[in-house]
Length: 489
Image 1 (tube, rainbow, N blue to C red):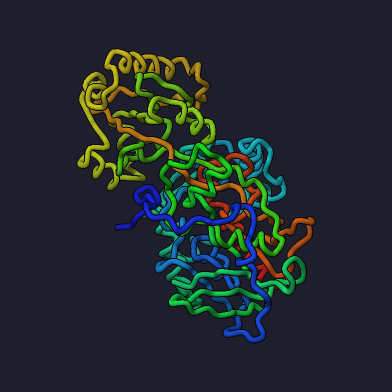
Image 2: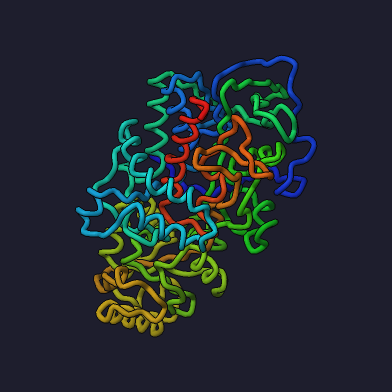
């Protein structure tokens, strides 16, 4: 069985930083060694989607490349992600009868991030992600037919792999890496990035912790690609920027703690947008499990403990985060009918049926019966659903839900609901890069031979990440970073 991000809540967190999260301590800096233990052309840090795509592309460009992963298994957050990927591909959106384009994708991404993202990075992402989809098909990923609007995605341009989760990407990429002879070394933790001088010169290589107190120095003749992910699994680091997030669960695997980002800052790398931390609905406070009946958002409404809708369910993720955190007990309930349950099961079938068994998803033949099962006031909940169904007819929602998402009434029994809360999900801030995936220093200059891709970077999503854009980001800038590291561009 494939484990995805929404099935795994990291309960054990790697030790937090002792210093401020935005700064590197003296212990993080590493002087140039007199001798190197190993030498490669390109060293990639991290084996999620960004790292694997960077490594594969660099290898196929003729560079002697290695991918280093600190955990015992490859995959990073991509492995535990839902796998939804946004791309404005003409054949797909025309078949779906949707108006779209890379330009519209760009405009919506910029607007959703309050125009705090780098416009050139966003343009590069949206124009090149269709190529990423074709590249993924080349390495063996198969996609389910059709596109949809993922939760927080703002537009129907998302697709999922056949296996319904990010694990499909990792499986295909690792198999392809083996085919082309790209080594992926697990339990190899990069503890420092080595530069000629602490704040100047080219990047020369990395310090690698092999365990049991043994460290080695590995040289990179052409470049280092940092693709080690974000820091949403580090509660102290997240709370430094947003104190509301301290006690929340996280959707991340436990390796997302930010050490490599800290190492980049330690060699004068610029970090931007560090207080932009995204949460998504998932395990409610006091619960160990959850269900996912809100991915096909056009079929779902969110109710609070008073039985009322409190937010437009197709709103930006930060809007839904703030609205949910303000509700009673920070706990809310997605509600859908039989058609919505079937639609959501196209993405999370096994999980939802397990949730019915373990008591985190409930079903009933009437809305009033369902309300009693989840301890919501039956009259208020029934009235809310009645009013929502009338909104589908009128195409008008006082809370601002778009007409496109007012397309399906909640009328077909049985009806489903379950508790959810907010979890730390994605850190939009990180190392500043340019469109070549080169890392920028605090003076606005390129750090020679240092590249970065994926969630470790900042400036691509702005203040709020559009759902489905993370997978698009990792494979697009991962490919860019790998090619430029191999070719010296």
